[in-house]
Length: 300
Image 1 (cartoon, rainbow, N blue to C red):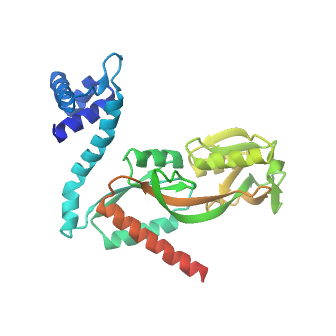
Image 2 (cartoon, rainbow, N blue to C red):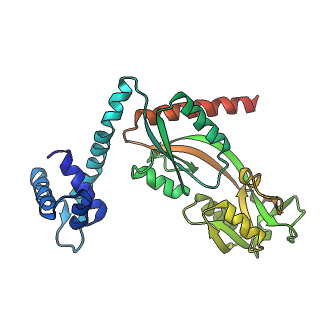
């Protein structure tokens, strides 16, 4: 058994088909079938349930997949890690970012890091907290920003910020001009929320239930700018973080919410019980120090 067997096996799992796997790997199907048989012979177990129509992993197959995924990741990172040991700071980081936060300060930190490590490149992936956690768990992202609480058994994390959520209504709405409202007053209002990939959506729905009602959801989006446009078009009201509200136009207004008030906490997370690349460790260290420094200044 060698690394090639593991790569081919993972491609079969990914595609769910030896035919598709052979096409993606540019090898014949008989070749990949033989490699799979050889792998099972070396391990002394069946990796797929051949009584099923599709390529379904056995219990042994799932266990082997988890280990093979980590071994292949280490193998692919080896050239970069050797460069790092020799002092050549280069690499690539994939960062998951929710499109419902003001990223100005975060981009400033990213820019400062790039000045220190110009050979390290970035890929920013916009998605909701749930998809970001899945991406990190599946090694599709290295780190991500998500809403707390997160699953501490699966992820390391450090806190970034906490902010209040406020009601946002169009100009001329019946609640316009109010400084604050009880959440229960929104019982009959149509809500415009983020889609189910966003933990913020769950937070708002849970708060409404605490206030004694299920919100009437009239529209959903993954972009705060679309939600703003729907508010302006009088399609409903929304509840948004204060940092996002600060970027909205003048044709909407925000109102504080009470009984209960709603807030959210954001954190940077990365995978536990898994290898973390040198560049990811350096970025985490740099970002954490910058955040601590900035929070210290604000606290003075």
